[in-house]
Image 1 (tube, rainbow, N blue to C red):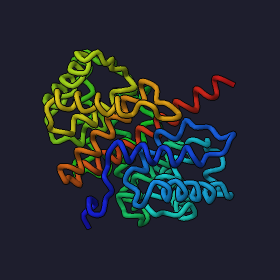
Image 2: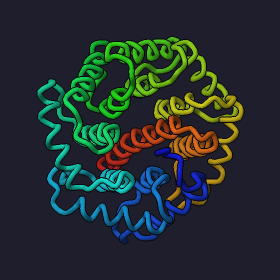
Image 3: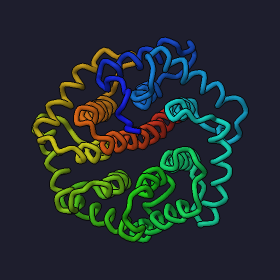
Image 4: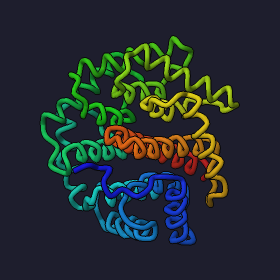
Length: 327
């Protein structure tokens, strides 16, 4: 089945409508930091915005009903997870059972507990299996890629890399080739002047799925960065992953930057409002969804969906840390 069939129009208007539906049904005391990313995850869910908003909230109620692995999750992460479960038509009980089944298999591969990052990785692996049980071969491949990356960066690589490694697990390259490709991209971007730290490693992991060579990937990344800079858009480490996603598209750098900037203008007035960082990443994702649909590219649609999931979990951690610091 073509994943592009029966999709709604993936554009700014739909995002705003879903965002409004989620915000309009929140409780008075409920936090709102999750709404920007929950709405983004829900973009390709079938149905009207009001149906999607209700479906996500109903799913969250199921998540809250004693599913043990979810008991320690934050409110913002539970909304993100509920959006994914609603999108994939998965049940909280079935996902809970799979997380519990997979956990000891990961520990047997000497992988540390990953909390929310581990749950997201299980979700991504489960999506690759079309909700069938994650195979032992998948687990071993996942572990081999992770350990291969950790070989290069033993103090940098941690459970925060689980989601991007889960995406890499679905590629055809060998675990050694995947880890080497990530390291080569990481080093090439570092030589180009980018800050070599965890944000760059996450971007490099994701860029291993690009069909470009290492040199072409680094050149494309820097070309986009410089084009945004020319438009007075500062690119921070938190934006590296968004730029990595944009590298999967063949439009000219000028076209990409102009369209992302126009989308940012159209996102003005959202309630709750978007900060500068969220504005850039949400606009980048919307550009990617619009373009993947216009090009009728299932591959680019999948890449964008994977990026949305990884960006959402990263943003959830940032928002939760900020909330904890404010207490």
